[in-house]
Structures are given as C-alpha cells and as structure tokens.
Amino acid sequence: DIVMTQSPATLSVSPGERITLSCRASQSVSSNLAWYQQRPGQAPRLLIYDTFTRATGIPARFSGSGSGTEFTLTISSLQSEDFAIYYCQQYNNWPLLTFGGGTKVDIK
Amino acid sequence: QLQLQESGPGLVKPSQTLSLTCSVSGGSINSGTFYWNWIRQPAGKGLEWIGRIYTSGSTTYNPSLKSRVTISVDTSKNQFSLKLSSVTAADTAVYYCARDLGFGEWYFEYWGQGTLVTVAS
Image (spheres, rainbow over the protein chains, first blue to last red):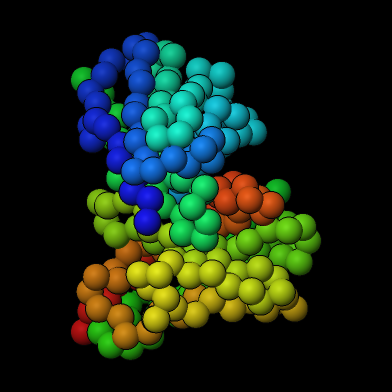
C-alpha cells in the first residue's frame, strides 16, 4: 500500500499569509495526486487534481506542485474561508486509493 | 448539477450489517465511465476509501475491508448501496458516497453530504 504522509499536522497562520502544505508518498505516484479542502461539518471539496490542475470554480490562490513522492499545496494569500483541513489523495496505485492524514489550517 | 445523497440507519448494533444507499440526482448513474464510491471518516480522523462500483456491476474494494464489504448498484432507481457486515465500534464514522471521473482519474469530484453511522448496542 502507498502511505501518504502530510505535514505539518497543524498550521496556525494569519489571514493574508502565504502557506505551503506538504504531502509525501511512500513510493512514486507519478502526477496522480489530488488535494481536498474540508470545512467543519462538510464533505471534502476537490481543489486540485493531476498535481497542479485546479478543479472547477477553485480560486487561483490555490496551486499545486510536485511529482513522484513529494507534493505541495500552496495558498498564496489565506482568506477567512480557507481555514479548514486539507487532504491529499493518491490515485496512481489503483485499485487502492489512499488519503493523507490531513493538515489543519487554523487561525493564529 | 449532479447531487448525491446518502441514507440509512444512523445506529447499528455490533455484529450486525450496516446498510446505506446513495441516491443520485441531476444525472444518470449510467452515463459516462464513472465509478461510484464509498468513503468513510471516523470522527476527528482522516478519510478511508471503502470501495467502488461501475454500472456494469464491477466492483473494487479496499483490501482491509474486502471480506466484509458489498457494494451494489440499482440503475433503475439511480442508486448504489453499501453493506458492511460484522460491524464493531471501529466502524463508527461518517460515510460518504462520491463519484470519480473514470479513465484513471480516480479522484472525487462529487460528494454526498455524508451520514453518521454509530455502532453501539
């Protein structure tokens, strides 16, 4: 199984800051990596797929990068609605799809 | 706009079978080359993919749950279902249904709102 490890577990930041979240795969997942945002009490929302492609309606302040085993999600200027938990997911190791443990972004 | 909605009992006794249904609206479950998935999330924890089904009936399950999981589809009702047998407290979670994009794009664009299932006597 491919294990997805996200860091940090929690990130305390102020609105307007630029942040970078990390996701590491235990073996290469090529570019088959997605990111989700989950607000309290809501289902996850797809942000990024294929490592760097923004999903429909996702603001340009969200960007993804990386390949192989190391990936990042960057939010260029954090807005109040961005305080949430972020998950990465690999879909290279079909048929077992796996998620990272999440990074919580909260207000400093 | 495609919408998914989970339904089923919110409380299941230990050793019994958890049964949930996902109703799809705003589109046909038969259209396209999509897989229909179940994902769960214990309170305060991360996401675990349970398994998926294609409208042909072809299924794929998470190996860690495979012995207890059955996913089925009813195209006439535009629904698909999850059965998880021999449940324990560890199966208490919010259960989501979700659709991927198919063709190797196995990420989840559409999600249901989730339904909490508690396993307790």
